[in-house]
Length: 60
Image (cartoon, rainbow, N blue to C red; front, side, top):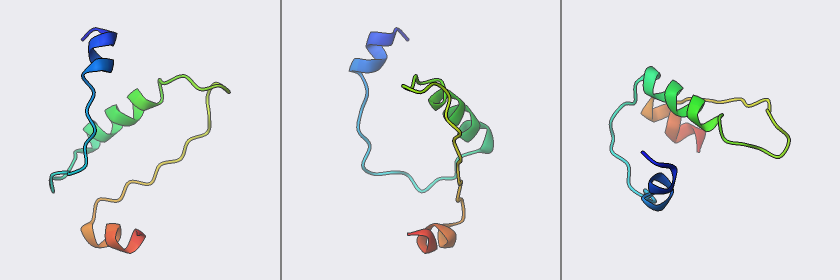
C-alpha cells in the first residue's frame, strides 16, 4: 500500500469485536508502532497486555 493511500484511507474505530488477538498479531502491531518517529528518538516503552475479560474490567 502506498503511504498516501494508507493515510487517506484510515478509519476511526469505536466498536470492537469481542475476539481474541493472537500474540503474533500483537507483536506485529507493537513493532509497527515503534517504527513511528519521535522527537527524542527511541523511548523506553512499556506495554501491559491484558487478555482476560475480568482483568480488563478490573483495570478500569
